[in-house]
Length: 398
Image 1 (cartoon, rainbow, N blue to C red):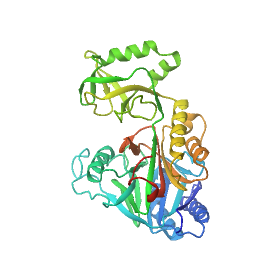
Image 2: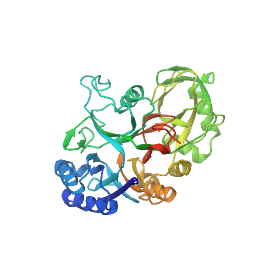
Image 3: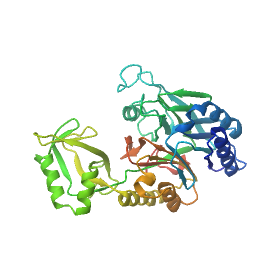
């Protein structure tokens, strides 16, 4: 049986069509004699006006059965990260025995925070979904919750695409369509599955607590005392270096598996601490938190993000290794966080070896933590393609 194979290439020419031609030429050369079942195109947002022409060129030259893509903040090809809006990356995959189904999700018809009852779930035998969503018009977090109900256990990977400005919609590509807004993706089923990993780039600090009073995203008490008091205790006991990190951006992690005896890095769903009450002593976090949940404060810096990614990749490498994969990393990472370019792409290559890696920089990343997919920030989300027979269940994390 023909093996799963991939090829990737990038182009940085200021002319979008020249950049796309360079990218698809490199990708098809790397794929060799294998035929492309899927093309993923990452188009720097500066080339948004040429999206139609780029998509047509890639379809014509790659001969891929299906194409998905969109405008992004930067692109990844192999070990190189191009953190600017005028690069194009093309990733091609030969997926023998796979059922690749295009998915199009328009923006909700009414309230942008509501879910659209007209959405069609992926096929019932889907092994995973790769999605690019517009951050302006599409409720990605709500979509994660909807998908978990519509297709329990199906892994969702991907990220938020990028428009030309904060309020402009991303341009999204799906086969012969180029659309503004909503989300596009593919379901992958049959003999191929998506094996996912999410690195949130944080490390826990201080003691764990049980939430004893909460109202939606306001934590009033931790272990019977005002949440702000617990935070003050943490700050007083922290080192000078950790105090600086606490001031720069405090995070809160929720344990994803209450059966773990000693949860550590990677065992929490991390959300930002957004503020504190002046009088009530509560803290506001970026998600709903319930009474009885176990939580722990977290901090993020370059060293923590590097260690977390490499530790998770090492754990990932103990299972079936993909020959080709997609990487969705946050625009808040890259050289701005690590001090030099290419960090996440080269960490993947260091640990997993010669994987055909394509990807992009996103304004939010999609991927599973604790068996369910979520919208993340400042994370790196990896979607590796492996034989479905190598996983214990469709979409399972190893």
